[in-house]
Amino acid sequence: MSALLALGPITEEQYLSDPAFEHCEFVDGIVVERNLGTKPHARIQVKCSRKLDEYLDSHLGGFVVVELHCRLKVRGYPRFRIPDVAVVLGDESTEQRYLERSPDLVVEVRSPDDSLTSQLRKMDDYFENGCRLAWLVLPEEKSVLILAPNAAPRTATAGETLDGGGVLPGLSVAVDDLFV
Image (tube, rainbow, N blue to C red; front, side, top):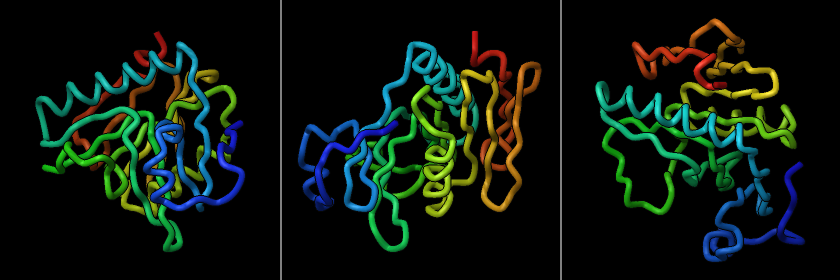
């Protein structure tokens, strides 16, 4: 379960200026510590990044990053989320300290201490800010929950493939490849 690092609400400026919060998210004025992933979590993160980066090398312009701070607006207030893997399409500058929007595709790898509800709330924040596709990787189940705004979620399991839909046309990633 995520832990709170500050006793009460702080400002966005305090969040951004305190190095102790570098790997934390910022939700409604509260600093929320992210759960650290396990070795399998980290390996899945790298595998997703590699597959997505290989796709972008031969297709659209854009970039893939891990743990990029994304400044989102939810009900008019700033939130900073840090997806495990993010695909940002277009010519967005990589020099900025954080992304001023949601990535086009988000990958979150569920850590053992993450609740499914908290992960789905994050996805809602991303979608509210323009994300078009999300993969929630569930290592314990060896499956991926595929989410898109205004669409029913679906699950990909062993023997199936993930695709990039309209976001990354032609992308194909075997679910099994994420868990070896």
